[in-house]
Length: 403
Image 1 (tube, one colour):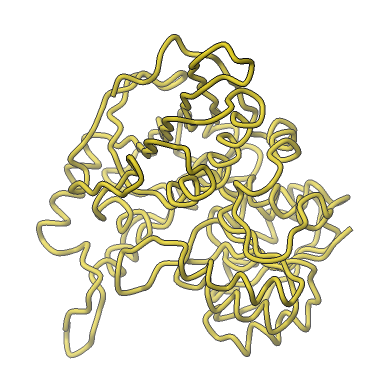
Image 2: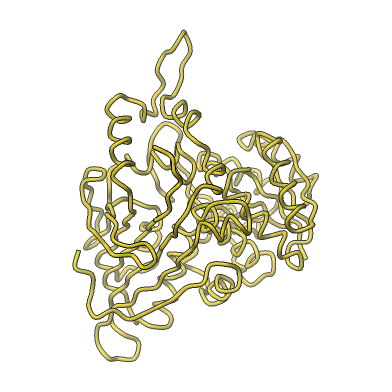
């Protein structure tokens, strides 16, 4: 039985809080805070209707450390679950250190003024959390998060060492909009427009954004174009699996998405530097995010499936030579909406956030310092995925990937 404080009130937070409420034997008291309290109240109302559980709500600016410390002191949680924007990771970690409480997030810190995704800023907190006897779990979403757990499960149960790793993220859902993003528009577009990077032979190889693609036939979705991108779990996977020769991340995008994004880039709407408009500084990408459909409103209209997983090749544990395994989850947008009122992209991140929280508050995962998913035992997390809406499957492939 534990008290948790969740920061942020988007689609991922909605899923996470609903799933926490469905597991009241683990999460006895749920508190939700965001800059916009009305969003928290809407989530709390849905949770009350669906689970019969009360969620306390608060208004908070997560970048204001003293205010965060005060709120943590009021709530007295055993864990702060950061589902706010990645820019807010460091101030929330600062508040957790000052208040003496464990921390969890789903995405690594990035500066507001540069689309740069690295763990270095958060890894620098390791000694302080360790000395304080606190745990900070990084990246407990799907990718990062489940993809790292999938990889480590394969390494524990199937492969002695991993030679090549490909992460494949496919969203086969159709939301009916001309252009919309399935998670925070600002973060999504920053990721997509940043240069692609992958790990190969001990170094990072950079290529222009959205220039390398391959077609892959995804189960329950069909053939889709997957584009080479950079994603933060590549950094932690390479760190904790130094034998990996090549690690890549692929994400699918439809032709309409690419067309709209290209136009927006060409006219400057994806810029993250300030421009003057009517005497005021505005960030074009933030303005664009404000006028695009909110991801949390897309659940009712989104139909289809997501299919996210990893393909790993390496020396088999049983000594039978090199083998390739594919482990993945398929999630239905309609089923996710029926259960939580959110589409599957939010669901596939919000459920792992709940599971990571459950691992921590129950003491199943307990390690002082700043910790990545790859450092923890994958088995109990994998068991909870099967039990809480994200069942996985693993199969052996005939050969390594040919792309």
